[in-house]
Amino acid sequence: MKTAIGIDIGGTKIAIGVVQEDGKVLATNEFPTRVEYGPDYATDLIVSCVEEFMQQFPTVTGIGIGAPGPLDSKQGKVLNPPNLKSWHGYPLARRIGSAFRVPVKMLNDADAATFGEYFFTFRDTYKHVLYVTVSTGVGGGIIINSSLYEGALSGAGEIGHSVVQREGPVCGCGKQGCLEALASGTALNRIWKERMAAVGKPVDPNWNSKDLFAHFDKNDPIAQSVVEEASTHLALGLSQVIQALNPELLILGGGVIIGQPSFYEMVYEKLPSYLLDQHSQLLTIEKARHGTLAGVMGAAAIILSKDEDIGGKQNGI
Ligand SMILES: [Zn+2]
View 1: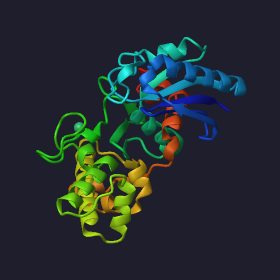
View 2: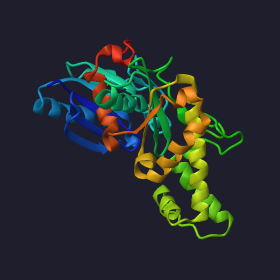
View 3: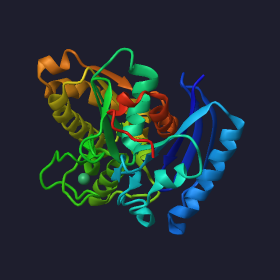
View 4: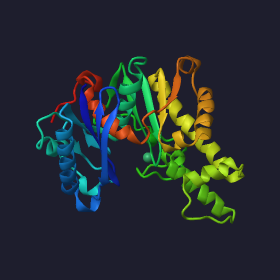
């Protein structure tokens, strides 16, 4: 069976896996990115790990990479992602490709995860799909006519930076009131702590969004108001994209969605009220299936699919 290597590059860790065409993950490995050591350090570790996997699994036909955006997928180059400061302008795909005789292709990490969910689970049933992940940030990707839509410079699907509250909190991108600054796990945690501190309640600096949901489940009114408002903002942000694209399927993923069923339910229930009937009637909503392996599986799917499925313009490097 056709097999590919998927490499998921993150600001704190890099995960690599061998994935079969049927979605079975045959092997995985991961190590810290160590951004402070620069990209050559990490790339050397990637190359030696891939070498081992290629010897172990001779059926591997290519190497897919999902890396933080912004990036240029056609050049296989990292541009200027804030969490990979020492990597700016690094020709990652070419550098990895020079060590092997198989095709190497690269997408931004959210697009890779989108494509992986689509390719392994939903491609036989749907043609128009929106994928949105809510974890430390909010990201997304778009499938149109069964092909990944990347936009002009691999930047389509950045739903996290849709402004849903004028003069809202400042986002990491510099704008105010982005969805990511209001409904990501990081934002939920920050807003909760601010509101607790504002009314003089004790705040543990080690609390994270899981603690927020633990308070929410105990009917704490501050936690409830934070989750309630964030679910409204997320539903609002999703509705804008759904109205522009009219997808048949919305896939929701990421730790906050998958780990917190009550948050998912609130978004699920609110969303139709922000949509035209013609958009909500045909829309199916599903949870993402790949969990923490979404990045690796998505990166491998770039290789396992036909070129047309990722826009037909993805070049081997
Ligand atoms: Zn933003």
